[in-house]
Length: 171
Image 1 (cartoon, rainbow, N blue to C red):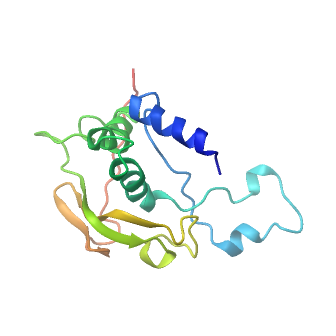
Image 2 (image 1 turned 45 degrees about the vertical axis):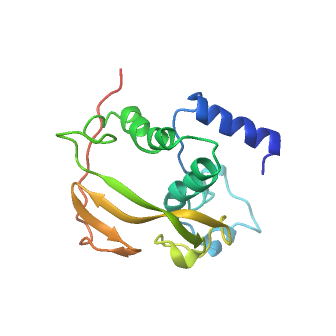
Image 3 (image 1 turned 90 degrees about the vertical axis):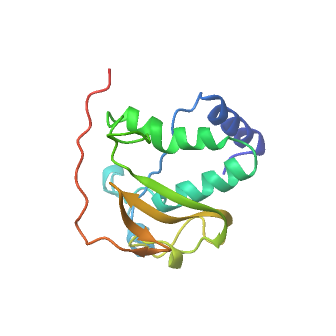
């Protein structure tokens, strides 16, 4: 939805560090929930905003950023892991590979080609704004606190086994 020039500038700012991290306005409203206000538009606070995006951040940034040479692999890790952990006061427990950290990893197969569709995603959704986009580089395993919790698209951890980790105020 942006011009080629705007997209180029965003990639340059991401690569240079002017953009600190990348996020999603992830929201799991279905198409019918999104469209229920077509006749009478309510106040802004009642509109189901956002789109599904959490599961697609890594493959999209990896493919269109790292694979296409717009950002380095190191920068990819910074904007998806290290910098968010710092921003939310979770570093060095999260966002780094070192003794004492939680051993959280997303393992990406850099050669795995996937066409993004709602069927390959795990959110409670029936659409994706990235439907039909093919990427090369897909998360094949997720490790949380040293435990494999997703492998080849299958959730392997018990429901509710996550632990809330409060952040600390960032100075």
